[in-house]
Length: 426
Image (cartoon, rainbow, N blue to C red):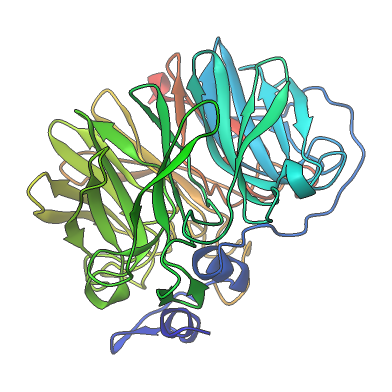
């Protein structure tokens, strides 16, 4: 496999010895845009599967079971007092689902993807535009390279665009599109410039704009050099300029933060160095007080376990926290959520020195954490796998004084869970 992936597996990067062995499926998420793991499917009643509150302010709301509810849930979006989300796998056709949940954990499946033209493997957080929800599937569509779909809160779904895999892009991974001036803006992890090859991917990704009627326009095709390669996280809109991240490219192939106008003028704000400032900023950035905050899934000062960083608009970067694996967590893939000036996020693994939720020597099922803007980090909850969930991969959603999130696996059937954390009880 490519050099970065080999380095992560062997535990070395840029001559520095690192201490975290990354599970192979997680590397595929990064390098091959493939996050669809097979998770066992069991029948279930689509009603709340509640457990007693775990520790402190944490509460398990729902455990997925594969069939027919889905497995491996990703991000949540709040609309009308309810939470809407997707599962990568499962459902009645095994190609993933869109679901709606009450804040108490009562889940109803709105749509089961059928594969083929309908799409398969929905990823990332849904976005709301004019009362409807929009999202992406990593695969499927008319050309098999992913789709953008629309779904109403009542469950009527339609594909509004199928990526062709060439100059228009392919495999929109974890996109979580953003609405700007009445249109949808997002990224594809691959496709675009066919002459660009990074980490075994053909095409280094694109930034696109899409109308509700399905007219697509490519704003930018990445070249895999200093401009970055393979964007995955959500874009954000700051005063009409879009900001995002690329997994690779930039300095030493460690990823970038970039900005782009709606006309397609792209500029790199910062290129990551790997050690000690981080690598692979998978989740995008969040804006607060004129600065940007985000996570890198890898890199940092300890064990290549990831970081939380702050970045000024002019490109001055500061590491707020470097994860150690134990006791604070490892591999923060999700975006940061801001509540009352505090940053909240998750790590997919780490947190425990004894609970084994990952292969390759990594311990711990992930954490829920907070970080102040000055860099004081606190672990709020450590996941145990069963029954509370494991691998909280996506970011958190703030709704009425609480944070809601999902885990990719764990729960009652090892198919993932929905959880709540009350920030008011800290």
